[in-house]
Amino acid sequence: MSPDVPAPDVPHVDVLIVGAGLSGIGAAAQLTREVPERTYLILESRASIGGTWDLFTYPGVRSDSDMFTLGYRFRPWQGEKALADGPSILTYVRETARDYSVEDHIRYGHRVVRAEWSSQDRRWTVTAQHEGGQSRFTCSLLWSCAGYYSYESGYAPDFPGQESFTGPIVHPQAWPADLDYAGRRVVVIGSGATAVTLVPAMAATATKVTMLQRSPTYVMSLPSVDRVANIARRLLPQRAAYVVIRWKNILMSRMLYRVSQKRPNVVRKLIRKDNVAHLPQGYDVDTHFNPTYGPWDQRLCLVPDADLFEAISSGRAEVVTDTVATFTPTGIDLASGRHLDADIIVTATGLNLEAFGGAEVLIDGAPVDLPSTMGYKALMLSGVPNFVFTVGYTNASWTLKADLVAEFVVRVLRHLRETGTRVFVPVRDPSVGEAPFMDFEAGYVLRAIDQLPKQGDRAPWRLDQDYLRDIVTIRRGKLDDGVLMFSD
Image 1 (cartoon, helix red, strand yellow):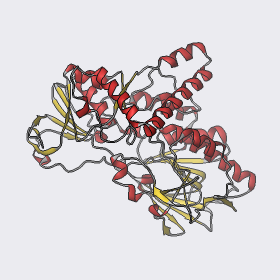
Image 2 (cartoon, helix red, strand yellow):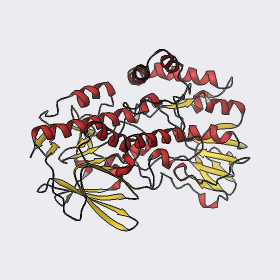
Image 3 (tube, one colour):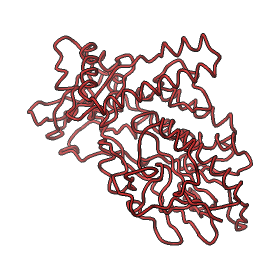
Image 4 (tube, helix red, strand yellow):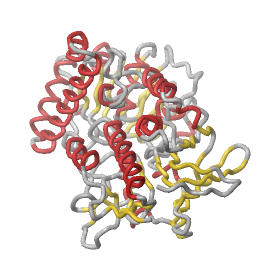
């Protein structure tokens, strides 16, 4: 990539990263490590580093992936817990930023609203809103690490009669710092990872916490401390131990996913057995923890040390499988006729999906219609030059994919330098068939699937959700593959 000459009033960098969360900090650290001669800038819409782990502050917030794979490949996780709490993960991200001097390259409070590619200039012009108005930046490569959901607000359906409820109604994405639930009756609406985290955490001090779910989710207990990891750390050098632990967890997670897809009834029975072992004798497992869909058609919820089941067994928490008829001043009337008393209602009802932070993307003045594009290796879009995005796996740790995307960007930057080219773009063969971008039944995906790019029916357009395969195609695969085109 030959150096560009920027307009005198517009800052120019080789790489502009959108977002200073787990992905964005990892991206910047990899650039610093591997291609330190490249200039970069991060535009972060919020006032601090951390993304998800800085935004979410609800009780018990934690990872639902093990930290030996959610941690960066280049920076071993040193914490004791495999399923770590949110503050520990935030500290890890911030320490990574500090170690690689990433903070010197961040513009906080800058929300990217528009990005336009100029074929003539071979660069992006990016417009960001901030408190003082708007600023423009130019870059040779635009890299979206903004995740896939809106940071402005979570998904909150309109429940009948909710205006009549006299207590607070809280969404976990906007948790009030002063919310006091000690000695209160709490109803948590939802059954996903957030709900199963909130319930045991709040049950520690609340009078009673009820998890109200329309339908069950697969929930499985996992030890919070990885004993194999502790043994490996005692017997092996630090780096070797991390490699062993990481690959053990990658392979076990992959095996569980593949067996879930090929023999769902086997995994269903395994999870049910785990639930029965941790719940009171005679508990109605098949009503409250036996979904109609197959394992891993939605994300499997992991709970550390069976904390959710322990809260249920102690009587401090309850799971109710029913639907809301209406909110009332004192709680919720259910379709079955039962009334749930509540002082506080938490709507753990999910996220609003938002591609690329909601920014408008244009090429030579023409808006890019995302549903008309196709994902190349799930990290670029057909026909969109010099643009890379990071979206993690739905069936494994997010950072496994984020690390691979960073390695891909480094490889591309080196290839551009070696070949003297400046532009790279995936070109779609018209014969490639189309499919939805994600074959995943999570509500936030299904609500927005028509707004997303497509995936293809064959490589490199197919989204495999397979880390081992992506190692071959992304980390090792030929860049100049006849699909990704390079030019001056």
